[in-house]
Amino acid sequence: MNRTWKDTKEHLCELNQKRYIHFDFPIRNNEKERIIKRITQEIYNHRYLPFIRVDIIYPKYSKGNKQVKNKVRKITLPAHHDALIYQYFGYELSKRYEMYVEDTSLDRISVAYRLNKHISNITVAKEAIDFVTSQEKCWIIKGDFKHFFDNLNHKVLKRQVQLLLGNAYDRSYIKMLKSIMNYRFVTKKTLEKQLTHAKVDFPYKKMGNKAYTNNLRQLGDLLKQKVINLSPKNHRGIPQGTAVSAVLANIYMIQFDELLAEMMNKYNGIYRRYSDDFIIIIPQADISYEDIKNLKNEIITKSNEINKLEIEHEKTQLLSYSKEAKSIYKYDDVGWKKSSLSYLGFSFDGVSVSLRSNSIYKFIYRSKRTINKYITLRDARERYLRKEGPTSYVKKYDDQGIKNYRLANPTELYRKERIYALAGTMSERTFVTYHRAVVRQCLALFNIERRSSMLAYAKRAQKEFQYKTRGKYRVVIQRQVEKQIRRNQRKVGGINDEW
Image (cartoon, rainbow, N blue to C red; front, side):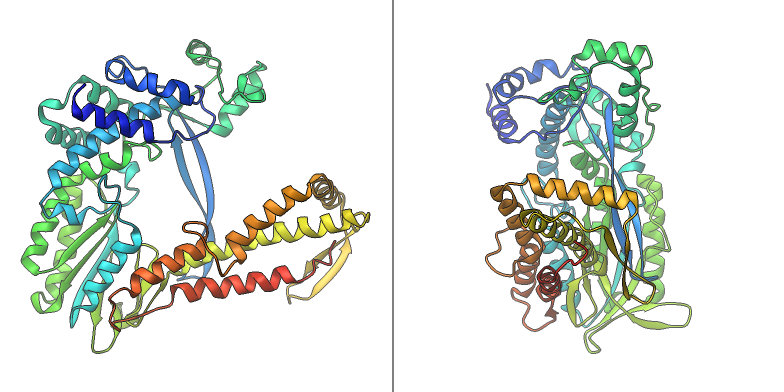
């Protein structure tokens, strides 16, 4: 066994397999190493299964029109054995990519999904803002590639992978790329409807079994009989839910990244790309306003020519920073107006760095849902312990925000009774565990563990942005989150008199 394969094998053994229901059963720990040992022989004949797509809906706040709209993120999950194969290819391609960018400008440009450089969005955002504030005046171009993963051109992707691998590009890579590019899928909701309609006792319905089919033969029969109907073959883009997707995206962007790096050397600026988000910062002493507008249009054109990816003109911001005025400006039809730079979840207005409005809104929204659920369950449990049933009225607010009470309708009564019954079945230990989880996520201001809550993230960002800032800007990230936590505390301290 050579050293390279030994390194890959150890890496695969250390990775955790995600648990979700798919066409095949999750890989057990005692069989994982056995599969990994023979993975290099199996990849040539491996049969890739269809994907299952899950829609995750989350709210998105728009600062411009101050509205909240639901955004759908489509997560496309591979089968468990396929996931392990993709982990293998992802690691091998990442090693090749790191060798290619080592000691080049690309090593600092492409900052997301790196094998040896685990750079957070906080670090990247701070570097960009620090570079801005180090200039007397500078131009900022910020944009993204429209539907990045969904629009990757297959010819460009194959060409870039082949150029990177050279002689190592064999039929196993060809087969893997084909499975990623021409994948077929079925949504989870549709699949479960199809299986229920078939009236067959499938293993996912049984306790402890986590698969939609018993084996690959059964899956083949169901596909042949059209019990399970898949989407047509995909002809553009790749799914985001695999271990190889991120590194393929970085490989795809090599030629474009190299071109932008050459441009920035000419203007003494910097270019950074975090997945589909990019930022360009150029000192104003090195380029005029007319030239920066032309450069922006040239970058948009080159993206279409080289990558076949669209950068939308309207969504690509051209900003100006002035150290003397301590302001960010944006040009509109009237003239230059004060604005702010939003980048990777943070906002900079020339004076302060804060969480952008959408980031803090997500925390407010999730906190509100978690707190409301907790208060409802807590108060229902207290009534249960006092041997009091749920009340027959509900609390509602009118358009003026005035609290009113009315009798619950049958649906509302049924819901109240179900919550009451659930609260009654919770043991003291279960409720305490639930209570601690809510406190950790939404209520605690002290003793915060790393990565345990939004406040933990805010504290880490606050500390990193303040490091060697030397008064260039204020950092108010932690204060934003603490303010909302205090609101949560006041709300939990109140009584839910509906119960």
